[in-house]
Length: 248
Image (cartoon, rainbow, N blue to C red; front, side, top):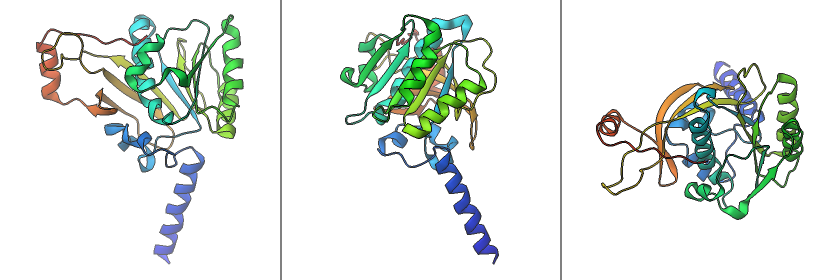
């Protein structure tokens, strides 16, 4: 009796996780790219068909925006593998399109929707998320409240498009997103003493995760996946001439 009850509870948890977007990715590369971040998500599955928020540090807006864009590009490249299409909605586009190639995002997979008036960005984002032919929607947004986020979340759930919102508002408040992140740049080291910059590195803070564990990591993106940077590598990075890698 106790075993049967435990099995029913376990099955119920799995059903809830699937409804919240934590289901096996259609492409196994989605979970492969997560690296050390995988342990934070229920069943190791990154939630698809939901909203993800990324908070931009207003005091270091340019570097924070660049770090968020790079991290998101690395994350969505596996979702877009094959013939997936991504819409990028913004009123003041900050991303430099060719830089996305370094993260595995092909130029012909991205459609930039440049909005003339900032107040129309959220409307365009909601319309984009309603489109079932789109795999990913990235939007640079300002104010976002609970009511608007619920509408965006419902649109994503119905179409199964995954939304990434880059937020530059000062007061994030309460929303219905599945996750909330803060991505900060950190120093990289040169590769084999060659001139230029090394692999992209970030301090990744997962501030909120519906049904999972928040956490903080220092990671780098190499060979198509995230890798945790160990203490020895961090000490090397601080002792050598430092370089920074920007995407944006």
